[in-house]
Length: 478
Image 1 (cartoon, rainbow, N blue to C red):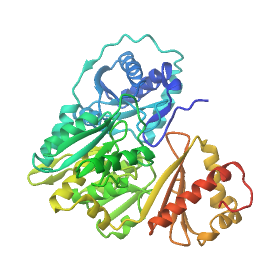
Image 2 (image 1 turned 60 degrees about the vertical axis):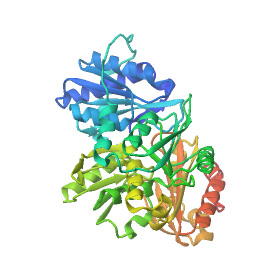
Image 3 (image 1 turned 180 degrees about the vertical axis):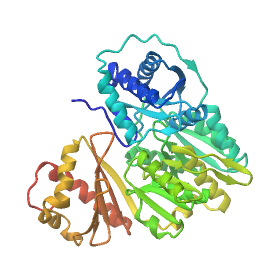
Image 4 (image 1 turned 90 degrees about the vertical axis):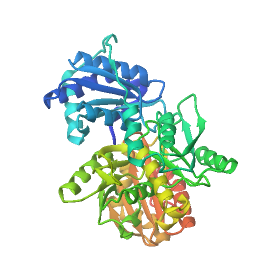
């Protein structure tokens, strides 16, 4: 048994199970899939700032060389910057990152020359990994050509937004251990803002944009109280998911950041997973809201579907805030080419740009969006089989258990099984349970019209979950 598996975005697992032969073997398998598709030439490699990432990247470079490809080392670089460089070169890429998960875990994200791999590619890579049956990694001796992937990424946004887009804005940059911590400052400066670096860390911090640590929220409020800032921004570990706070240090939910980004870019169709806020369909702002399962491969497939159906500008985003641009955008004689991979820098800039162009603070834009109050969190160290058993019981296996669990909230009036179990309750609130695709965690999402109701519901769920996961009796979850 191994913890390594493909989740919502890439292969992830424990560092102890990825270092050595596994990292080498999975990269060799990826190269064989690329060869089957007629790809030759260079393969680019990037990495985040985890302590284990340089060693894993070196194994990937060796595997690429042994597979007969030319390894190109982009160094420590945001995932979207690596993807942009690889697509510009018509080359595949491997990003060594565990994104937001703890440092004892890491992973590999694979890119074809045209963008992220899909679920079919994942199956082919898995089949090749088994077929190769590699039992030992060779000594690392391969050399790679160095490549600058940061400058084109910076230029992409400097050219589109221009030097005066954020003129007069002062933006705090929560740097922690994000691989994008310096380029964030550079891009904001290029757009006319004054960046203020904050909270730079010397060791890895697992910042999860869907389940912020209490200390992250406390730091943002502290910084906002200490100095006058128009916003505080940050990213997760590999800089493909953003954090955006208003001037008070209150972070905007990721799906709201995505919706504001789509508004700023003039999207007519948005593509987003079922976990994003239910109010999106009721806004009347977009011609179509296309819902998917959780994970960037599903959002990318949905964007392709929307484009094929005639959409003019397609923007995809997830509840974690990662934005995928499915169409070229033209504005004021400037062009922003499509980039169908999760990116943190675009939503950061787009939200700030929207606030600047409308002359309104971010807090006002957020309040006017009409989103339902929503919170999310996670219960860690929960094996997927326990999550699956609880979801099955709440769905079809035990109606009496479900009725008792939610009797105080009017029972369950609707269920959605596209990804985990999303339940609409009789009092109008919603509860969504799903297993994380990247770690042994149970993800919990709640929505309600009242902030007090949503906080109470989340507290109730987290009070009941440990008992419900361990001891399945007939009593109410509460």
